[in-house]
Each structure stands twice: as C-alpha cells, then as structure tokens.
Image (cartoon, rainbow, N blue to C red; front, side, top):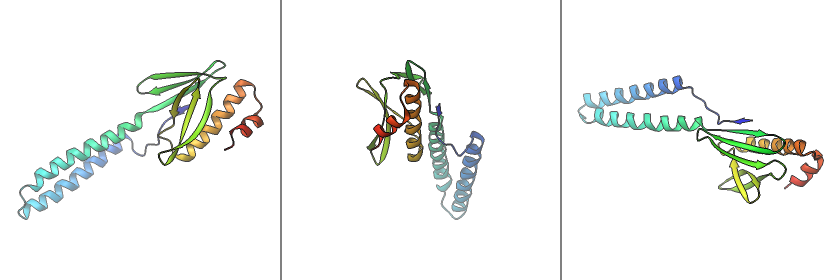
Length: 154
C-alpha cells in the first residue's frame, strides 16, 4: 500500500498561484507608491518572498509518503522521502487507534515498539486504513475475520 497526502495543486499550479499573488501584491504596492507610500513596493517584495517560501514549504510537505508491505513474516513500513524503514513481525503486530491531540492516531505496535502511520490522512481515512490492515493481517495469519472484528471493537 502507498499512503500519500491529498494534494490539490501540481507544481505548475503552485507556480501560477504564486505568480498571481505576487502580481496582486505588486499592483497594490504600485498604487500605494503612486499615492505617496514609497515603501510599499519594498514591503510587497518582502511579503511576496515570504509567501512564496511558505507556500513552497507547505507544498513540499505533500511529498512525504509511507509504503506498507506485508508478507508472511513481516509488516514493513518505509517512510519516504527519509527512506527510514521499520519492520514488525506480521504475527505479533497490532493495529491500534488511540485518541490524541484532537484526532485519532493510527499505531502499529509490536514488542514494545510503536509507529504512527497515516498522520497526514483525514480521520475517516485513518479509520478505513485501520480496518483494512486488521483484515489483511488476519488473512495472513490465518485467523478468521470474525474474531478480529470482535477483538477490535472499542
């Protein structure tokens, strides 16, 4: 499974948005300078640079993703772009939904280690992912689905 955050803009769309915002700020600053505020263009340039930087940082945060691989012996989570990899024995891993900081956290837990996954997903998506992982783990471990569903009710 690949988990990726939803992204509304492409790189091209982000560039267009920044160009429109810069054009609006410089137009407004030009009108202000025409009326006597000689510092307006300087502030518009500083504001444009700051907004461009902030939008770029926010857009690059959408590059992160998580790759979840499940086989007979392990469940592997590869965090991208950092390429950090965490493995859990598939038989012992538990999928938990815990309350925290105003939303539910989706945790994989095994042998005293926890890993939060899907932090960038919406609440409903985390719940659906939790159910799907529980079913997949039950199928790999040969457990009947009814037992998993009964055991996971909260």
